[in-house]
Amino acid sequence: MNDDKLEKAIEAAKANLPREPLVVALLGEPYEDSVGEEALRIWVSFDDATTDKQIETAPIQAIKQAIMNSLTEHGIRLFPYFSFVRECEFKASRGDC
Image 1 (spheres, helix red, strand yellow):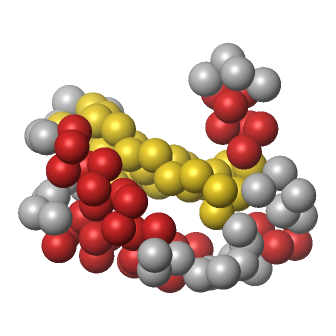
Image 2: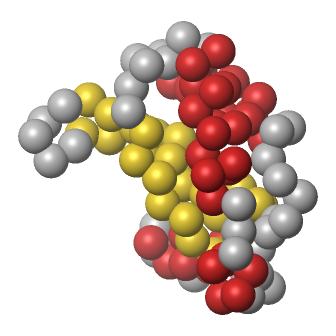
């Protein structure tokens, strides 16, 4: 899969995300699922100030749909596995926080 195409799809998806909770970052990267199939890992990073209540009531399906629509529009057919985290949790998963 073309990394540039994935970056463009992720960037385009940002324009269609709900205003709240605030998504501060989206990252898409190649991923291999549990049976060895090529897939995508999509990280959706909320602002650190996002409360548990905001996350519980977040329009998760709308966020996923905006991203999946953009992937499809950019010709990307790989299955996306989503991870929803706060910004610091995302950075911690990468050793940055």
